[in-house]
Image: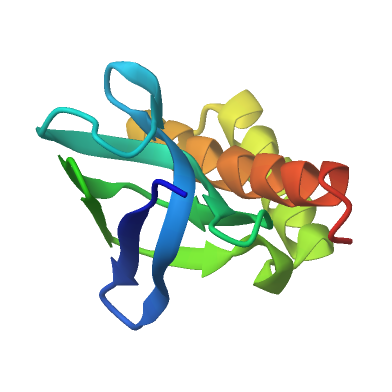
Length: 140
């Protein structure tokens, strides 16, 4: 079976290290799907999911707040600013945070930082999306 080694690391911890047959993530240019033997690439990741299919055939989902993705033919490295396994995310907390930020966006107070709120909303929405994908693959 043709595999590539993937390492997902955040500033706080190593989240994953192992062999996979497929990798997907969201770069500034859009969604990337990578199989073993992919051409080298270095790109910026945006808030979103990282999805893996392990050599054993299992699927795994991670949330990242953004970072750097390095792809080599037989290796992928994700250097994330912040990241969590989808099964470690708190859905109720993420949905409450999303409602709070959306409420602030609607108020438009004078000292409000609109760009920061939009960034936070994208990160929270990405968390919720990762949780929902994890649920769809039958893990929750």
